[in-house]
Length: 233
Length: 245
Image (tube, rainbow over all chains, first blue to last red; front, side, top):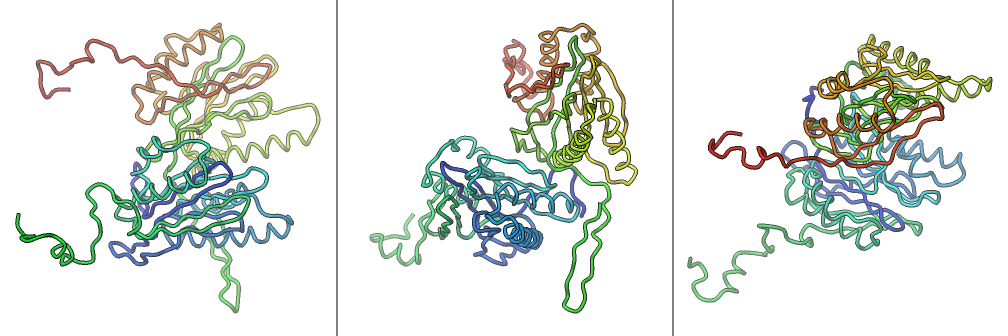
């Protein structure tokens, strides 16, 4: 692993976790790439750890999968032993344990989000290296570079569930527009005291941004819809 | 430190020894810490930034933490390693309290412990990528020291890490006195932090100042410093010399 010391490796994907008044909303794109090829255009990067805690995965698909598999296994045992649902903090700390102690080998940035009865909705960011940072919202993956300014301006405390989800969908959609390593659909997972809701926003249903055009079936439709001389300048 | 991953391939369970760790690279880093002894104890200042390469990614990281009753640890460098050091120190303090013998770890002891940890990690080519500043007051005596990631350790009346070495130290050498009041000490630290804000790319304008006295440790709320840009020379610097900077 020969990395440039100054600029940490940016990772394919856009992942987001946002707290709102009552829970959290997790969001991600759905593109998995092998070099320039899109290996999976409909991946699910928001992975369940427990009934009430999910994790957004970015970076190496293999590394993030194996880390989340281990933590799901540990949390399952922990829940049995504890006799009640695991907390988001414990989940985040287990991820941190693996991420920190294997920092030389792992290349994955994760966002842990969930709801528990003690602290409500919480988001923990765990970037490369294994630092844990509890945040009101977190962004990660290569697409997140394009979202720092957006969130600086658009983020507000105490949003409603609808506002939070709309913010997440808008943000992932904006990142997809500019980041080649992000694409496909926007998936969201909402976690609160009532439970978990999964949502799916296909690429063609998202808002259009700068220099993007309304999708058509064919040029022929445009030509037929327009009046005479449609190919004239 | 090695981490074993059990592999079960059906007929036998093998353990794969993870790659023995060698020198790493920092990912999320904190910038300078500046600290001075003053009349009643020690003052320490740091900003709340966690940089990710050149991105100012995290803006709410507390890089100074109280250790036991008498000490304050400030860290620059890799934040995950700082978090790990805090875990080690938690255990140290816990064991110290368990003795329940009326004694408590002072800054000298904590500094010594950290020095051993940092130096031994350096010898194994697996450093904790931090420069640590340890300040404290016990039995009326003020203490201020620092340890680097290669185990270089010393005490002084004023210390600074990272960019602070180059920008803050000269100011402190010029203006530090043993009998600084709290107000003068804070002003001196703020002078250093302002220069760092102007000249350190990884500095952010959100800082905390911590005070350790015989009474204990307090870390201030986060706040921002005013900056000055109204020099006439800043206004139109390239007039008459287009293309210069």
